Length: 360
Image (cartoon, rainbow, N blue to C red; front, side, top):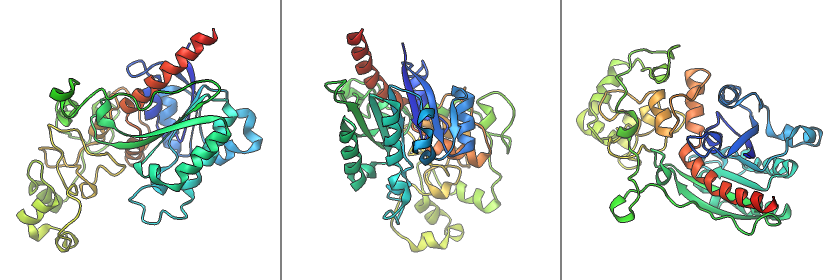
């Protein structure tokens, strides 16, 4: 018997995929999902079924909708991370910091025995983490937390994410968390397989030809290129393998943005090329803009495509994305890498399975 799962703030379902698909964990079944992005919900429905709803979580956590929240064994999800993100310079007073509250309301309504909150690493040092733990204890949950690097669990991306896991004290003695890594940056020392790299994931793809999403089978349906200006193309060509905006400044100062020339320090990923032999950097929602990060192809003079970004997040080619180019990019960048989700899922499934056998 599979354990019933609710995914809140589900996006397109990257976290659900890691829990329910047989290629990942496969020991859970999704019974309800909720997100306020209609394009993301459409993608979720296309992959997991029609039990996903587009609405604000406050509506579902209100008293009038109690009967519409199904029973579940586990609730997973990541309240929007911008309120905790270091990229958000106005974090204080951001209402998104409080969305964990209706999340916990639904945990209580569903009768779940376990919950998993995923977020940016800033959550672990935020005051709200203490509030989450306090609310969980009132509901009868014990909690633990950890910062996990997706690359350590088979995702081809060095994405660090915070997890808070809670389990009903009346149901379990302890949940073993965090999961043991499955991959390593130092395989000779650890005996684990090496981190998966950019080359592992995208080196087989041909150079993109089209400018729009095409109605063709994967992987080429998301493998389209942009139409850069001549200046942009010159900028791409000025960045060598592994290079970044500082190489652009050295090699072509005449076409380097003046603000970059004035700023002589700072991030080294801006306008950078990915490395073939390393995992990707964190894929964000605007990966198609190289001025936002290290999103240039390792060799070709262009940003990575949507298909390449999806693979670098760990999505298989058969996963269906719906919406415009901007909407699909947002779904990819906001997702939880399925490989990382699967590692968490297997740890929790082991405990749920054991408890289910004892009860039988």
